[in-house]
Length: 155
Image 1 (cartoon, one colour):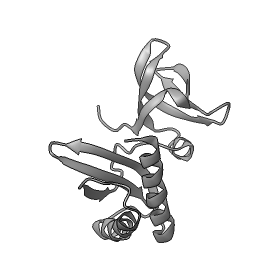
Image 2 (spheres, helix red, strand yellow):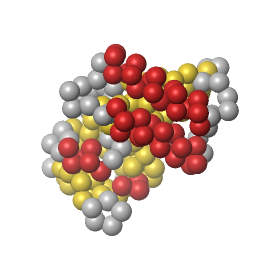
Image 3 (tube, one colour):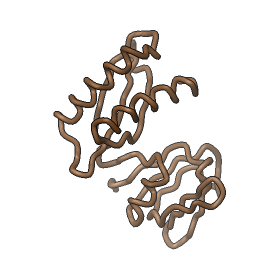
Image 4 (tube, helix red, strand yellow):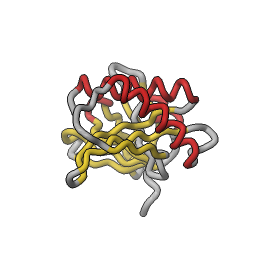
């Protein structure tokens, strides 16, 4: 997905979220077999149910039809972030301090590309850094190195 397409989709989804009172957590637009799927993960302090997803889907679908940023056919899926919730914004790292997280990095950091540990928080230093404790070893990872970040509840 191009950067301009990504920006347009985020703008439309965030507009929908603000209008309806939901947080947009993550957006993906990918091909699964012959289909293209636009997935939007939303959250709310009281949780997300099917009716929330339907409301969000109807409103976002109208905005997507008006703006028409996607030229090919696609399916729109709205979902809760789930138990292994993605962490995509600095406020997520602040909110979930103390939880176990899993990070995938674009490039190696201190010999690791995958890191699982206890989230110690977020630092606004420079462009932002994620603080993680991995078995007593402290990592201060630049935000720009993180490809994916998720809460981790499996063992």
